[in-house]
Image 1 (cartoon, rainbow, N blue to C red):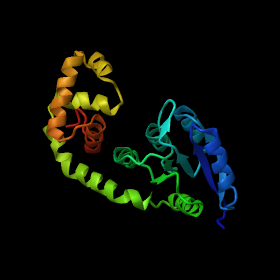
Image 2: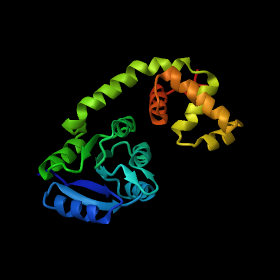
Image 3: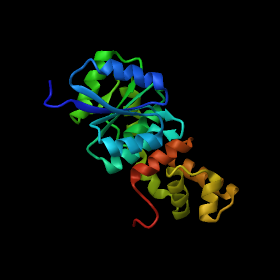
Image 4: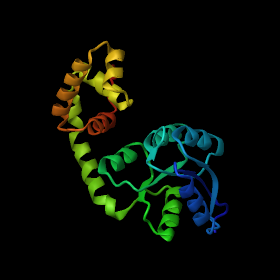
Length: 218
């Protein structure tokens, strides 16, 4: 038994899932559920108030994604670990959690003992990833790493447009912010996709975000 229990914040939009997790984890004296949340906004507020050791985070929430919450929580509480527990195994989603700084990604069919072990590993600073997901994520991260230099070929305007995509803005919102028409925004994105060798908006945003480049950084 540790000197003090590992404090947890449970984040899931289904109350019954949170109740089940709370009851399941209560059997381990090394763990203590400090609070629950069902939305991105509530998760951020609860994390700031409770300062948990580990946040057990769902991927999809009513007002955004767990990735959004993860970024916000880690920006203000870098010592907190975020561990995703979800039913979704989409490779892009998994990669986005890694880029957001999450400590791990687990699928909800995980065994109780494996979940407890993963929480303790995350609290200790170790990275946790379901073995079924490890190979595809490594492949995707390798692809992103090898393609980072391609982002350097983007024009200044393409960089500005992609920077807006990284912030989660729609084409219409990007056009309004940069004084461009929707069609022009689409053209810039199409050109950027070709240069980055990607086909999805999320892939382009993840690759561009990984470079850390923004207009004016040079």
